[in-house]
Length: 123
Picture (cartoon, rainbow, N blue to C red):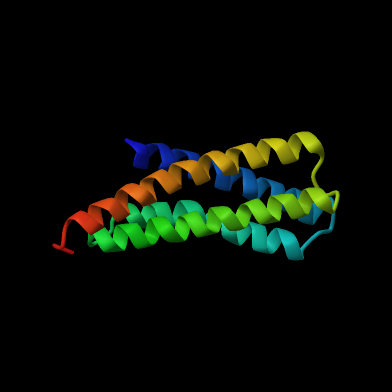
């Protein structure tokens, strides 16, 4: 259940990021931060999708862990975009809230996956 929720939320978040990065490039002429932000933000959903087809529990935990690291990185880029006046308060808060929710879901999935790994030795 959580995996399908995270799949949906990470995809919607990636769409928001792609659109925001396009705006930053076209309207604000900002290229460096948006490139890194786009990479990290779209990687979350890509790793979640890869986790869906993991070949083992260890592979699944690894892919979710990578998605979680990318989500944490996104928080940094969101904060930096706000601190450098590329995002207004409402945009910042909305992106931060979405990213925080994704982080919490991924953390819960990651903890469950690690608990499963530590309780079994089949993988």
